[in-house]
Length: 480
Image (cartoon, rainbow, N blue to C red; front, side):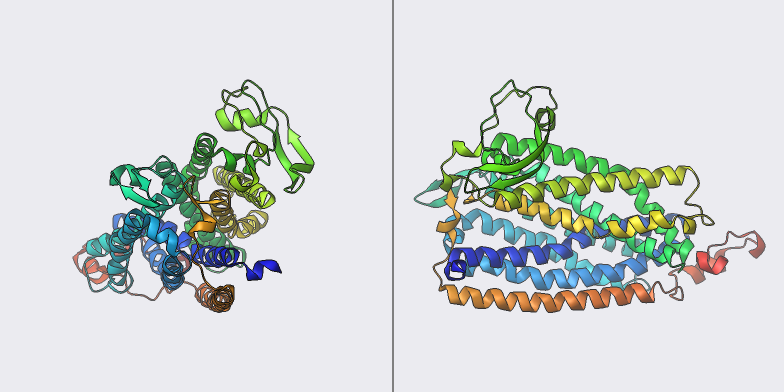
C-alpha cells in the first residue's frame, strides 16, 4: 500500500478516474449529434413524421449525456491548477490557450444552441431549428478538435521551444497542427460516431426484440447501419495510420504496445504478438502466442521492415513506460472491438440485402438483435482502452521527451490527494447510478407519438390533394 503515500501516483489515479468517467458522456453526445442531424434532415426533406419522432426521442438521451459530461468535465480541468501546477506553469501559454479555445468556441457554441434544439420545435421555424441542431453538433465536435490538438501536442510538442523550463510559443498554428493532431482528431471523431451508432443500434435492437414499436426502431437500426457501412472500415484504416505515427514518433510506446523487449532490425519479417504475459521486472514475456510475419504488415503494409523496431531494453528503465501488460492488452482490446463491430456491420448488411430486415421478418432475427445489444457498450470500452494506450504509453513523460510526470505534479500532501480522489470516486459513482436510472427510464417510456409536429396544421390547410390520395405519414406503429 506504499502508493497511498505517493502524491504523484495518487494524482495520476485521480486524473485517470475523472478522465475515464468524463469520457463516457461526450463520446455519445458528439456522435449522437451527427445522427440527430441525419434524422432531422430526413424529416425536413420527406416530411415523414417517423424521422421527427426519432429526433425528439434520441435528443432526450443526448441532453442527459450532455449534462453529466459538463458536470464531470469541469473538475477534470481544475486539476491542472491543483494537482499539476508545475505542468501548467511550464506549458500554460499554449496548453491553457487551447483549453480556453475549447471552452469559448466549442462548449459555448454547443450550449448556446442546445436550448433551441431541445425546446424550440414549435417556437422557431423548422429550418432555424435544424440550423441550431447543426450548431450543437458543430460545437460538440469542435471540442474533439481542440482537446485532441492539446493532447496531441503532449505527444509531439511543436511550434516553439522550452526556455528555462517554460514553453515559449513561436508558431501557434504549428503547435496546434502538430504531427499527431490530424489522425488523432479523425480517430476520435470516428470513435465517437461509431460508439454512438452502435449504442443507438443496440437500443433499437432491444425494442425490436421485445416487440415494442418494432417497425419504428427498425428504421433507426437501418439508418445506423447505413452510416456504419462507411464509418467502421474508415475507423480501422485511421487507426492503422495512428499506429504508424506511434511507430515513427514514439518508439517506446510502440514497444510497450507490442511488449517488445528486444530490438527488431530493419529487413526482417517479425511475428506479431497476439497474446502474451509481459513481465516488467524480468524484462521479458513469460508466455506468448504470436503470428509469424504479421508485424511488418501491420506497421508498414510490407513483408519486411524498412526501419527497426526498437525494444524496451534499448532505453533505461526511467525513460520507458511501465505497466506494459495494461498497455499491451488495452491496445488489443481496442483492435478486437474495432474488427468485431466491422464484422457485425458486414453481417447485418448481408441480412439486409437478403431481405431479413423487412418489417415482417426483422423480429425473427433474434440472434442478430442480441448481438447488437451486446455490441452497445463495446465502443465505450474501445475508446477508454485507446486513451489508456495513448496516455499510459506516453509515460514517464507528461510532455513527451520534455517534462517528466514526476516533475509535473504539484507538491501536495498525499493525504489531501487521497481525500479528493475518494470524494471523486463517491460522487462519480452516484452520478453514474443516476445516469443509468434516468437513461433506462427514458428507454422504458419510449418515444412520444402524441407530440405535435411543427407545420403540420399549415401543411394540411394548404394541401388540396384528396385525403385518400395522400401518402400516409403517420407513425409506423399507428399504420399497423
